Image 1 (cartoon, helix red, strand yellow):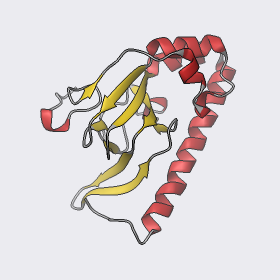
Image 2 (cartoon, rainbow, N blue to C red):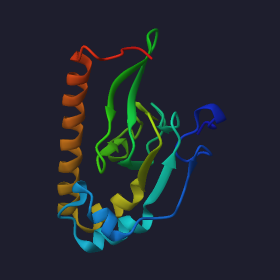
Image 3 (cartoon, one colour):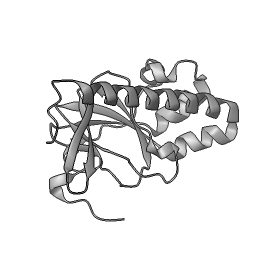
Image 4 (tube, one colour):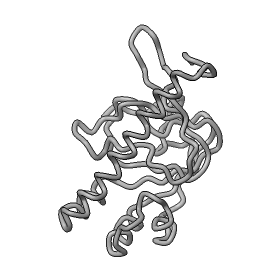
Length: 174
């Protein structure tokens, strides 16, 4: 694992605060967790961490190992994809509270396919991959239902990226 430099700290770094945990009710209030049984919410809430990040802070960095899943609680994150010889391209912006914004921890090779940078003061929730894996082992059908929600979020991101890139207001390269 490579060290993180101060200029590009991730959510785990010094540019964000790390208050502990979330209440089960907060987790249950997110649309993604609708229909998830209380026992699973309790386990996820124990592992969840709320992170407040400054404008410009990175939530995740493209190609880094994805050890956790992230949900947007407030603020906005830019989705950036780096292309060799071109630089970072802005692919979209997430602003919807409760949305799943980083899901690469759910699929091999467990590497982030884009970077996410805070457009403003932002709060995210981080849940480690291991917490979900334990639930999937205990209840494979629940795992299937959760992964269907992940697939829907991926589909929404793809549709959103196409719409964003076709928009005349797209600023293009950053």
